[in-house]
Image (tube, rainbow, N blue to C red; front, top):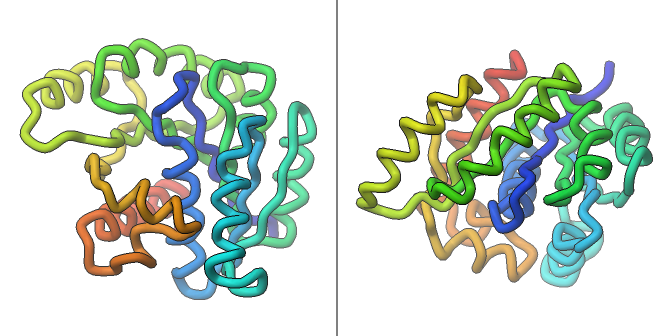
Length: 214
C-alpha cells in the first residue's frame, strides 16, 4: 500500500511553504512511528539547507526523516517512488512556477496552501487553487504567520472563506519559534514541545490526517 503525499504549494514567495513542510514532516514522524520523507522541488533548496543543518545538529542517522530532491516532471515520479517506501511524503514546491509545481500537485493526496492574512498573499491564492483543481487534487488552505490582535486578520479570514476552498481551523501564529528552530535544522516541537507553536502544528497535523481519512 502506498503512502500519502502532502504537497505544500503557493504561487507567492514568502508564504512560509518550507517552514510548514518541515514542521508537518517532523510532526508526522513523531506520531506512532510513521516513516516520513521530504522532497524538495524548489530550486532555491531551502528545505535541503534545513535538512543539512538537521544532519549537523542531530547527526546523519538521527534526523528521523528521509530526504530527496527532484525537479520538473521528475517530482511526480520521485514522490510516488518515495510513497512506496514511506508512510508520508511531504513536498516543498517553488513559487511562481506552474511547470515545477504541477507534477508535485498531481501526485498529491492533499495540497496544503499556506497563506498569510494579507491582501497581497490573498491575491495569489486563486492561481494556486486553479492548478490544484485542474489536477483534480484536494486543497487545504493553511493561514500562516497570523499576527496577534490584528483587525486585518478578521477581514482577510472572511475573504479567504469566500474562495470556496477548504480552510484549516488551525491557524499558525507569527511566532519566533518557527524560524528560530528552522535555523537549527529543527522544528518548534523539538525546540520547545510545550510551546504554542508546537501545539498549533500538532493541531494542524491532526486536521490533515482527518482529511486524509486517517
